Length: 271
Image (cartoon, rainbow, N blue to C red; front, side, top):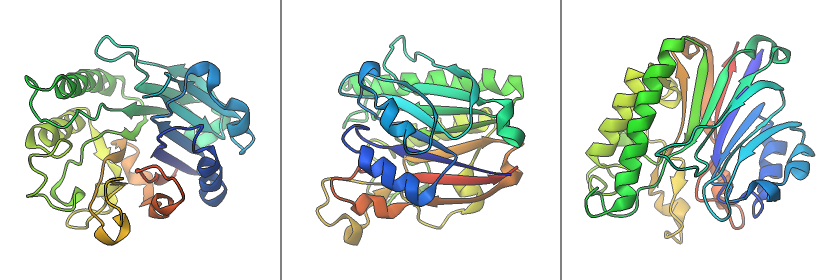
């Protein structure tokens, strides 16, 4: 069977529910993981999203910021929410697919929204950057514990770091810019490797190919300038890497009316 998983920072699920519908009608992934839903739990549009053909939905949210959700065609046997940095700030949610998912049963999908980190790459001067580094440290410790479980898994999300040279439009110009500083990129790559995660996109499409999933709102002609960054990721446990068949970025969503500044990233596995 094929299993398709998409990650997308939607930047307000209620504001862009029509775009979610349009994307799902076009792409029809089996599972859609959203970040930055910006919606408290009691306002989350369960009914509307289920009407798009995704009867199984779980979320954790807050008013006005953060928030993560997973929409699935398949039932899941369990869900999990981790609080990070001693904050209940809705930055992680996970599901484990139920037996009804057939060959995909038992796969756990973790959906993360890593803090952006502010504008100054200095943990002393910038508390937001310090929070980001603490979050990554906790992800690293969690990843080491998770690897010992030996279970098949997929980690997705807006990780707010473009780790490799060709994940940004200009490596040299962005070395001092939060999301591509050496401290962040080395930290992310270290935690990924230690936990045994395979970077799906670069597994199939290695450097020097330029790949982006985010384009700033500050650029009035974002498509022509194409000054993007690859901030949105799909990682797999080593046992799933051989069955990863394709990955792509749905760049056209960035050109829709009132879009998110992130585009969906989709992985297709042949189980």
